[in-house]
Image 1 (tube, one colour):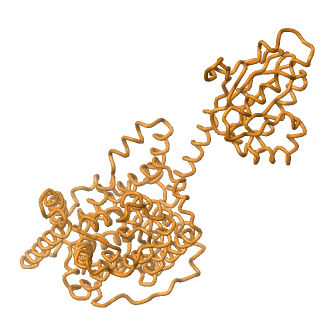
Image 2 (tube, rainbow, N blue to C red; image 1 turned 30 degrees about the horizontal axis):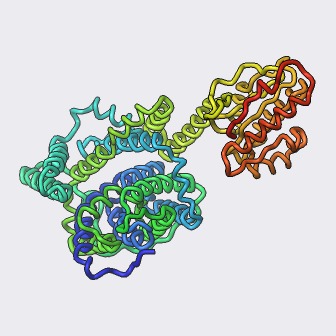
Image 3 (cartoon, helix red, strand yellow; image 1 turned 90 degrees about the horizontal axis):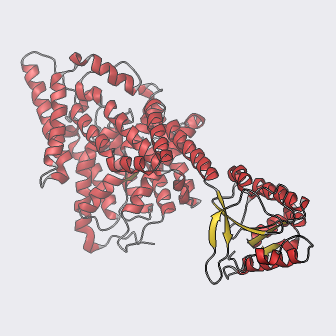
Length: 573
C-alpha cells in the first residue's frame, strides 16, 4: 500500500506535471464532451473531480483517470437517441451506473475479467471507434452538418455536398492539424495541442471580426456560441433512478471499455518500485472516479494511456501529480472562463481528429492480421460491427464471436497420439492407429482441451475397437482435473466397447479430483478401481504401473500371440 501523504521533495515536480496536464487536457476534455454529444464544459467538470478522486484510490501511482475518446464516443452513442436538452441529466445516471459497476468489480477483485476481451477484439473495436471519431467531427471541422444520423451516411453526404463546406471554418480546422503535427516535431511538442488550439482560435476570432467589419455574418463557431462556461465550480446533481433499467446495458459496456483501457495502462506504467499495480484496485479507483463525476454531470472517465504518458513525461513522481492536475483545471476555469469561451469549434474538432488518428495502431492491426485467420476474422467483424452498430452491442458481438471461434478452434485442434517406449530412452510418438490390435496394449496421449465441445473430436480420434480381441488401451490423463460429463460419456462408451471385446480401458495419471468425479458419476464402477492409476509427483510412475498391470492382465488371459513381447517396457504418464 503506497502512502497518500504528499512527499515534500516531489511537490515541485508533481505541481508542474499537474499544470501541464491541465493545460493540455482542458481542450481535450471539452472535445471529448462533444463526442459524448453534451456541453463541452462537462468534460472540464470530469477533470476537476474524477482525476483527483481516481488518483486517491487506484493502485497505480501514475494512472491518469480522465476523459478518453473511446469512452466519450460510447457515451454519445448511448445518449444520441435522447433529446439534446435532456442528455446532461441522463448522463448523470449513466455515469453513476458505470461507476457503480466498476466499483463492484473492484471490490469483488475480479480484475481477471479483462482477459476475456481478446487483443483482436480490442484492436478492431478501437480502430472502428477511431474512424467514427474522425467522421463525427467533420461537421464542426468543415461547417457542413449532415442531417443523417449514421456516421457512414454523414461521410457520404459530406462528399456529395462538399461545395457546401464553409471555407473559413475548414481553414481553421486544417490550421489546427498543421500546427499540432508541426509543433509536435519541435521542443514545444509537449504543448503542441494547447498552442495549436490558442493560435487557431485566435485566427477564428480575427476572421469573425473581419467578417463583422465587412457586414458579413461570422461563419466560425466558438464555444460561447453553443455553451456558456460558468465562472464557478459545478453544482451537485442527483441521478434519476427511473432511468436505471434503460441505461444498465450501455453502462456495463462502457464500464468494460474503461476497464480494458485501464488494464493496458496498468501494464504499461509500473509503479516506482518496478512492480505492476493491482488491476482490481485500479477498477475500484475508476469506479470511485466515475461516481464522483456523476455528482457534477461529468462524462465517463477511465484510465487514459495518453494522459498517463503525459504525466510521466512531464515529471510526475507520485499520485499527487494527478490530484494537482484536477485542482489546476478548477482554478483555470474559475479565473479564465471568458477565454475558454473564445475557443473555436473547428479547432476543437481538429484536436479530436488528431486523437482519433492517434488511436489507430497500424502495428497492432498488422500483428493481428499476420497471426492467423481466426484473429483476422475476429478483428474484422468487430471493426465492421463498430461502424454499423451501437457501440455497446458492437463490443459484445466481438467478445461473443471471439469466444465462439476460440471454442471452435480448440475443439478441432484436439489430437490423440500413441506413445511407444524406447529401451533406455524417451518414448517415441506417432499418430494413433485407426484400429486396435488384438492382445496388445495401446498407450494414448491427448493434446488439447478435454471440454464438452471437443468430445466429438476425441471420440472420432480414438482407435476403433472393431473386431480386436482382448485389446487394452491406456489413456494418459495427467494434468486434467475435470473432464466434464460430455467427455466422461465418451470414455464410458469406449470402455464398454472394449469390454464387449474382452478388453479394458485403463486411465493413468489421474488427479484425485478427477477420480472423485469418476466415483460420483459411476465411472469408477464401469472401469473398475484397479484400472485407475493416480498421478504421483514422479513422472512416469503411474504410467509404468499401468503398463505392468496391463501386461500382467494380458498374460493371464488365454489367447494368441505373445503379449509380453508386444507390451512396451516403460512409459511416462
